[in-house]
Amino acid sequence: MPQDATDPLLTIWTYDWVPQMPRGKVRDVRLRWALEEAALPYRVATVPFEDRSPEHVARQPFAQVPFLQDGEVRLFESGACLLHIAGKSEALMPDDPVGRAEVLEWVIAALNSIEMVTVPWWFVKMSGAEQNPLSGWMEQRFERLDAVLSSRDWLAAGRFTAADILMADVLRLPDELGRLGHHPALRDYVERACARPAFGKAVADQMAHFEAADAGRG
Image 1 (cartoon, helix red, strand yellow):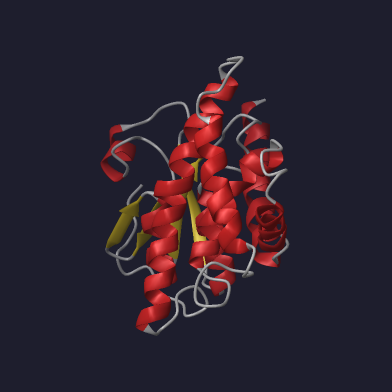
Image 2: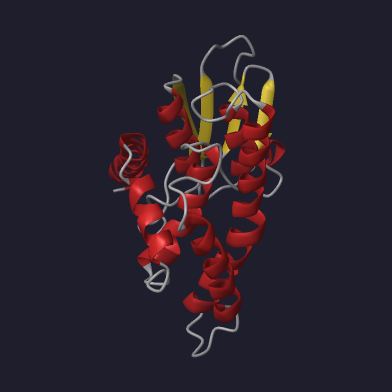
């Protein structure tokens, strides 16, 4: 797992393999997408999915992915990694203080106001419960976000930024599960973001990464 601190390439760490269901959704896709948008070179390294080693936990205390290495800088949590990448490219983070503040607040909103509802909602749904007590709460958040995006294409600084990478990725799963049906601005937003070539390449590369690992398990 060690990497030379003088190595100029950023390294995204993800799992060596995952089952079919989460493919295309593992959160290293957020970092891949950002680096493709920023046209920054990077490599992908892996940790075992089925054996969370002490070395893995030393890099990511919860034994999850992704984590990122940039020379001597090491980060875990996709939001922190994304902000670090954004700080290296004006394509993802504006230079002016107002634009930067807008990106920061919407990155945090994606994690704290939207994903913190959508992920528990999904877990309850997967449990097979007839009634999901989180549905109303999630719908309320979607209504408020839909109102924001009904008057703009992107969340911050009048253009696509790192905030949109995170928010669009957070919304992808509920969109695929039909939960954005009453929120046309959110549906259009996800479609607009996911039509970007950098997103397409990030997902395709992640899918290919895990598909290549299938052969080694056969």
